[in-house]
Image (tube, rainbow, N blue to C red; front, side, top):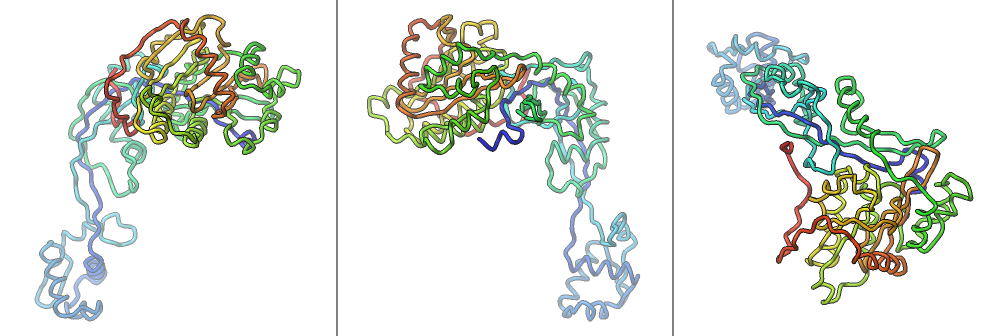
Length: 478
């Protein structure tokens, strides 16, 4: 983590529900097929020499009489060679196989019929490659461009014809696209509307002052001119998000939960948080039961740190604890930008998998607690991710503090800090040490009776098996 501040450091991630329409396209595609090496070189020789005595070919290639008979019979049967007495000659139609071959090699072509279901985004009207993430309510919705829903099948047909090579590389992800060429498109049919997920990262960079730089990971730089309108819509939505600002109350709450003051000390009495100083105050590998964290709790790097701690948990649960099951309590901070990422769902799955690997097949229940200020941030967007949703009473904990707590096992604590007048990021710890676990447990237990319930799904009698992984090949219906 110390080395991360020398270059761009990923601190947040986002997901956008992009409106799309699917088209069915029937196409005829030519595909190169390699000949057997012996046949290929015989054809090359005949192409150069026009006609050659069969015995001379056999002597040149070192064929036995039986091998000569087999090769010539195969080529004649395929309609590539004619035999006139003891002389072999390239069939007139076989000359076509050499067309366009720069190295002089014969090029045999097969024609395949493809049925393609192709998505076009309804903002920039470009072909879109499906992400393996299912569209979800906690992600950021992008509105379609005006009249985009009237995108005709003729548009999709022409776009497919004009950009077939791009389709092979970026949508079909073909490893050898040069083997294929589009022969014709026989039909294009408009099908259903849906949403695809486009991802974006936010990087912390120092050049030399700190700034947050959006990184549109889903759109390659070379494609940016064509996707400009979509990129603009995503960036506009991103700039409309907000996060809770750092405050003295937040620092005090964080210090009370963590039991130490290094975050406050890293301010050095000023208005700016010194990230380098904070990392030096908390050197890595000196405390095996704690890990420094920079960035959103649910980004892959930070979740991996927490999972590693869970897998280092030394004590197996007692039979009483196993019957009770396990609970993952997520006290989220305020701000409309929190949790607008596919990585939130992926984080929950990773934590569940880690708990199952460590503790066996016991019930796992997830609870999200919103600060009172987040009532207006549409809490029900997270209803499909968490078993329970609650609102904490006003003043319970600063909305600039975040806590992810797994009782008796591990906890994660973050607080928003100001790197400059306009740049704030979360920093904190993941820990399985007894003291912070006990402090967090006391804090959350004391407020349980005062939580306002938003939803609660009934716990199934038999714990359902977890999915292998978030996996989807097509877009989510809208």
